[in-house]
Image (cartoon, rainbow, N blue to C red; front, side):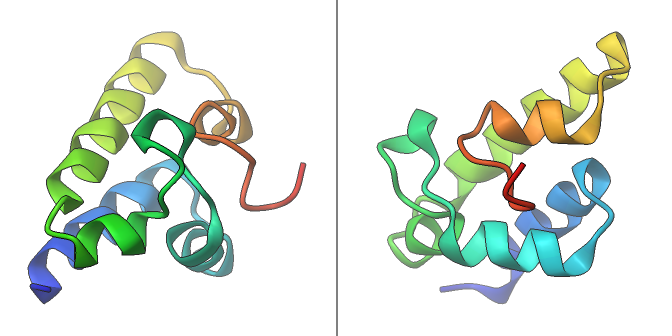
Length: 84
């Protein structure tokens, strides 16, 4: 697994959720429903990290248009990393 893809995923996730611990937990432990229930880390290890990047980029773009809250944006990927 390239460190580059994980860095891209983390950077994008931080644009959505500024809490580093929440991002860490999301990357490692939150199944992403839109991506067959795999975590971001599992997808990156399987060579599918670009799918996570595309999903996060779409959330960032949509969020900037809608100016919606952080938890709303992440909740669309499944459970909020903050457990909300």
